[in-house]
Length: 299
Image 1 (cartoon, one colour):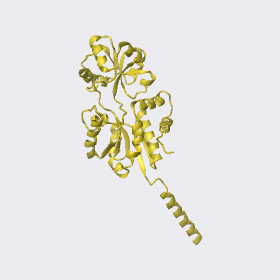
Image 2 (cartoon, one colour):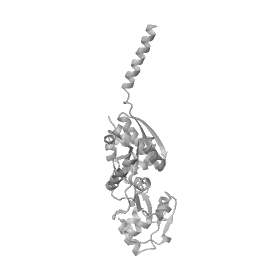
Image 3 (tube, one colour):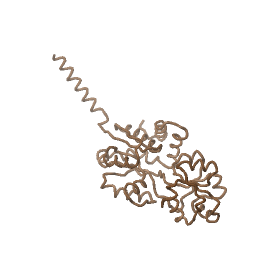
Image 4 (tube, one colour):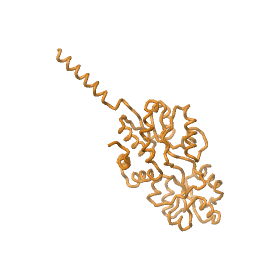
């Protein structure tokens, strides 16, 4: 009987020791919305946090409103969010072009909601206007100002493709025309489903398309993004959105994510999206390869 009790006592000690050697009980939940870019960001974040001793759970495929609610209620601890989405959709503010001013405004307003914002990146998934490279070069168009000047001189020549929302919202085509002082005839606007405008551009059905700066089609079709030289389109830079209680408990998260923050740009995200959506590689493989290539994981 004594031997049996001793064995139980020994097993208890082993369990306690093993528990103390675990990753400190640091548990965290990483969230992602429904599209490729978000899935890649969540996977990279999970790899990095696991590499730094966290036990990570991922929750994927949430809509924006569900994600926001989950962050506020700490059902999800951290996600990568777009500052423009936060300002307009969550906080009811007007969009801001300057990413630093946008970030400062969000940080100020979101304190009362228990949401912290850190690790603002250069990756800005905002609206863009894009053309086929050879067509833009043929017409000498490098900027939206160049485009506006050309449209004013040749109002019926260029056909624009865009989704209905962009065609009607103030931070879309109406505001763009006002900001750059040009007017496109309604007959030269083709409204279509999101994403279809890229195939229409490639097939020569339209000359200019709306898009987003990290869309993989920009790379696959070798498109030219016209520079927003008068800074109309608002900031949709990525930043880490973290429940404040989580950040209070694990303040080291900000420093842990610094290297990833610095590696995220329009070009790098466009390439990552391209590898998943166009080359059909797995999200996990693409995320891991990127982290390893950029020395973002510990040896």
